Image (cartoon, rainbow, N blue to C red):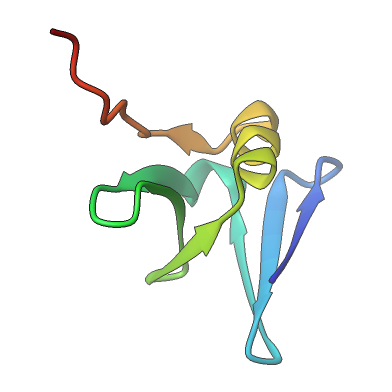
Length: 74
């Protein structure tokens, strides 16, 4: 999957199965999938797994950071 961030107009787009999903960064959310322990991008009503570098870039550009730590402290 390819993630594109357009800082000039504050949007991002991902390409999934030859389909482009685009949204304003303010409506994009990065969260955590507990089962896979991976970051998930919520965009245009879809959930897509993304790499940690992509998650960091999206959050840095203005996406909502709703990730959480799955490691328990003893």
